Each structure stands twice: as C-alpha cells, then as structure tokens.
Length: 420
Image 1: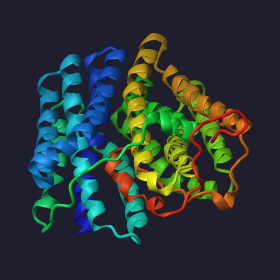
Image 2: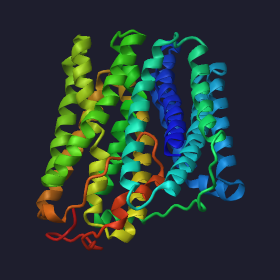
Image 3: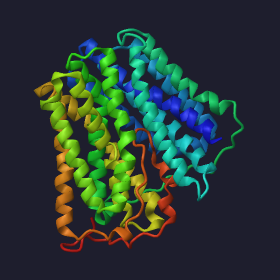
Image 4: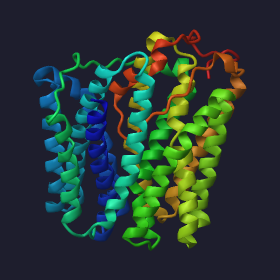
C-alpha cells in the first residue's frame, strides 16, 4: 500500500514540477514581462495556501477518494487550459486554481500515509515521502527536453502525469482514513516560542519558491537552450536530495543554530556566485546551482527542527502546521518579488535577491545566538527531513517528534532569556 501511495504522489509531483518550469520558459518565449512571470508563479502558492484551508471541508463533505479524484481532475484540466489561453492574467487565475487543487490532492495523500503509518514507521515513511518528492520534482525537469516549450505537447504531458496519479489509487483496495483535521498553533505564540523557527520558515519559502518558480527563466535569460535549462534545474533541485540528510545529521551532532547559520551563509555565497561569477559557463552554472539548491533545501527543515527543540511534544503537529503556513506565505511572495527584481534590474539580480534573503537568515541566526545560549546537544531533538516542494499541514502528523519529549517552551521572549 505504501508503494501505491508513493507512486501516485510521484506522478502528481512530476506533473507539478514540470508545469512550474514549463510555464516560466513558455512565458519567456511569449514575451511576458518578468514581473508578470513572477506573479503567475506566486499565484500557485496563493492557491495552495487556500487549498490547505479549504481541503478539509471538501473531505468532510464527499470523502477522501472523491476529493482526490475531483481535485486531480481540476488540476489536469487547468493544465490544458494554460495552452489554450496564453496570457498572463488567464495564467494567474489558472495557477491559483491549480495550487488549490494540488493542495487538496496532497492533503488527501498525506492523510492516507498517516493512516497506514505506525508509531515505529512514521519517521521512515516521512523520509521516503521526502525523498520521493525531491527526486520526482527534480527528475520532472528532464521532461522539458521531450518537446518544444512553445508547443502543446508538454502541457498534455503534464496533464497525463497528473491524471496518472489516479491510477495507483483507483486499482487498489484502500479505505478512507479518519476525518481530515488540521491543528495549528497561533503565529504569535509560535514566534514567542521560536523566533528563528518562524522567521526562518517564512524566508525559506521566499527563497525556495523564488528559485523553483524563476530558476528556469533565469537559465533561459543566460542563453541556455531547453536541454541545458532542464539540466540546470534538475541538478539544482536534486542537490537538496543529496545534501539535506548530511546537513541534518550534522545539526544533530553540533549546535543546530550554528549549522543553520553556516548553511545559510553557504547558500548566500552560491547565490552570489550565480549572480556574478558562474553565468559565463554551463559547468560553473551547474556547480553553483547544485550548491545553491542543496544548501537552500534543508533550511526549512532546520528551522522546523530548531523550533521543535523548544516546543512541547503535544504541540509539535500544530507548530509544524503553522510553520508550513508561514512557509506558504513566503512562497507566495518569493516569485513575485523575484520577478519584479529581474524585470527592474536584470535576470542576474534574481540571485542577488535570493542570496540577500539567505544572508538575512544568517544575520538573524547570529542575533538570536547573542540573545540566548545554545541548547545542549543532548537536549536537541532529531532532525527530520521535510519535503517542502508539496507537503501540506497534514504531513506534520507523520513527524515522529510528536511522540518525543521536548524541552519546556517559554511563552514570552525576554532579553537574556528568550528562546532561539
């Protein structure tokens, strides 16, 4: 059953990943202004956040299987409509619709994963979900080489991939999991407990969605052809799959805030290299892209792990849901701001913006470290890799840290004693 669920999720994420880069490249061929491309890509995350809020209502009304089928069908139809109505404002509306529909499908998929998970297997299932998500998203970029982005074929392929996600579930005996519910911690309380967790989650969304939404446009502006754009995006996204776990393990052995600071500093350096050094050759772009994708990939998971170091185990699911909401808000802003920067100052300035955001987290980490001593390593919880490419708050219930004891969470942040 786990294989069936992950297969369906993989098809869905491949469709989502291909569509994201395809729209950026096609918009470039159509002559869309950069700020309009950013708005189109941001619209997806606006819809995604809305979908995570409205999805449980649909599930309660019609059940998990019908909700999944309906939302997958809507996402498939919206994909084809992109090829029929080729203008920025139509795409903005269709991206909002697609984001809401995919959020619903991912919520239902994660609810099924929760239903088959046991206390002993939850961590393994979450890790597999993360790995499948990253590999599927990265691998989907290679489909850009199958046909010309100016043609209809790639939009049909996206629709096929999304529709294919229905097949594993349709031919399997699968029962409805318990009623879908989403716990959330108040954002003000979350910030009081872990300022770094809250701010880091928001900025991580800004950076990762900005790159995923506009990275292909940047590569296209550097004069790369479709095959080279696909290779650049694949290498950059798969960097997160390669680097996330070693960095996470390092954060379990060392002070987590120090590892987070070093990761953000490295990501900023890679971004500035893409903006000022690497654009002259494909090899340099691939190396810098791999490092940027690999180092930005774990930032959100590091912030979640740090927040969990200060959150009581009973609040783990609610806090993770709120952190993901902050990530989604940042993701909705990232492509729009990045597109504006590209249009106003040139395509290379995208990575100045993204690098500056990574540097801002680095500075915030240093400031938080000056406000309170680090938590002893023995009291740190375990790092858990998170697939922020598609996860919804429902996936938070898979987090094995919900069953672990956590350090008491201070409610108020005061000078000299505030949490990290």
